[in-house]
Image 1 (spheres, helix red, strand yellow):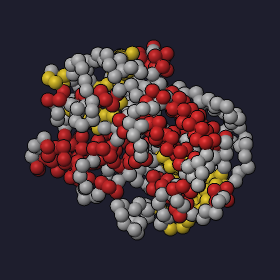
Image 2 (cartoon, rainbow, N blue to C red):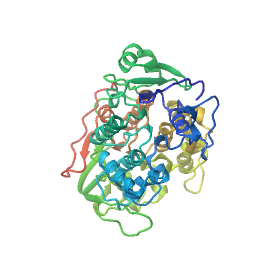
Image 3 (cartoon, rainbow, N blue to C red):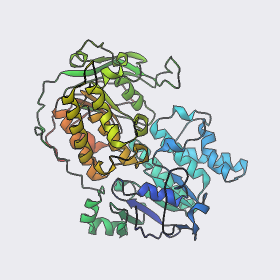
Image 4 (cartoon, helix red, strand yellow):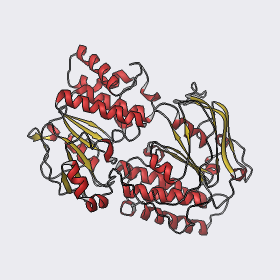
Length: 494
């Protein structure tokens, strides 16, 4: 980003909006004084916190990063929450009082000795915020603090932040694509354009009512107005174009995490799961944080063994003589059958550029067997170019995927899975960090995959994506049940 001129008063509450890739996360890192800490970042101009350069004011600003896993430093949750306060030389007796209060404030009801490695993505998000609250900073700088939380958790975390602000008078700058979460508790909205400069700034009601074209151009999710989703080059949505052939099913399934290199799975985090997804259908898995949604996704994708019951691939996936259980398949056997998009995009990056990352799967497909296929290589290259363009990644094709913003990383991770047109696509929070424009493009691509006869299983708290895909719903954390078949999608308009 460049050309940013912004002044935030002490105690002000600011919601910072803008398109994915505008530089919002980079700006927050600069405010916290950590932009040059091994990230390769640089800055020009002046950035002051309490009248002094930001790099010299660490501790005055508490930064919650977009990727909560990146700020977990210790093995137990109590120690992790205490870490920041300890580094600020807070007296020991006060530290543990703050730890208990901060964990309670964010709704993370677990023993202090609970291992951080056993937390779900949403629980890690709560943990990161608890560590910030325990520091009692003069400013809370929050980057997508509710992105991976269940609906109840979103409200709990937001309300915890509001209580802290009320008690301390701290300044707030929060980045969030979904405006409705924070609009009622902030007193100012600042909107950045694609280059990073301010394009709108003012009271929430005035900005939302009077800057519609500016907000639309910036991909802002305006309350009450959903993005338009359009298909390209494929049959319109409606009745399924393919027979409802089951592609993947689970029977009395139990799922468990497998920490480290242990050969035996840990105790099940969810059990008694029954589901079935057919060609052209979508299933959305919901439930509270920690209910086992991500573990279920990994198990359905063949990346974790079932802890009980079974996962069974339908006949179309078993062509070529593979077995019924995806967990027994090799990587080469999985690649065009079942693709997985992880909750943390970095967990699936294996190359040094965005283009190579997206091309990795098609190249593997083209190279399978004893002969290489020029036709498949050409088709794969065309698919890569299409995905780069549609997901607004063309200008980033030569960039290292690890250096991208959170929203850009998510789009790359989805593109890598879409590149091989898998028969089943398993997605873990596929739309987090997306502005309205890129969300609509992702939704359109998912819809096209369904129209082509693939199936989608998505772990998501995003009600809009479930609606536009006409997805059936399976909720974990309650009584296990087999979800009803997805209704036919009536159209692309969301």
